[in-house]
Image 1 (tube, helix red, strand yellow):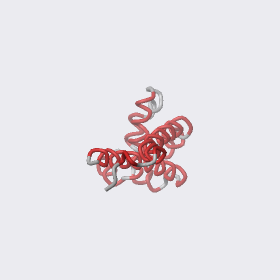
Image 2 (cartoon, one colour):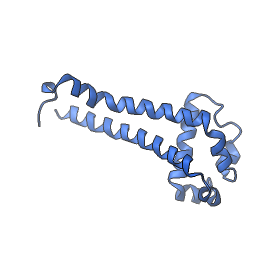
Image 3 (tube, one colour):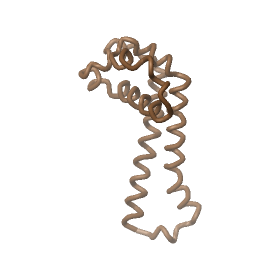
Length: 129
């Protein structure tokens, strides 16, 4: 394996900086979903227990809570079996969930996980250089 110290500096900046940029873009997109599409998501999941319990306060508790709520909702929609078993997600709401919202939740989740995995690979590569 080649030493990272011999790499072109621009390649090192891209390899190390890109996951941070992707992660920040994913968080920004998550905030965008919270501020622009939360009402549509709440309407699509109106029979679900999670929305019934927390619906009034969703998106109103600050920056960090908005990100956590959006990740919870994305998890509910993208991994529905466990949330249906828990009772947080109504099966009818899941079947009727709008495809454009599901696509956006998939994009934000993919961006965050891509950045996380890329950062882990870079950290391991730097550890064993």
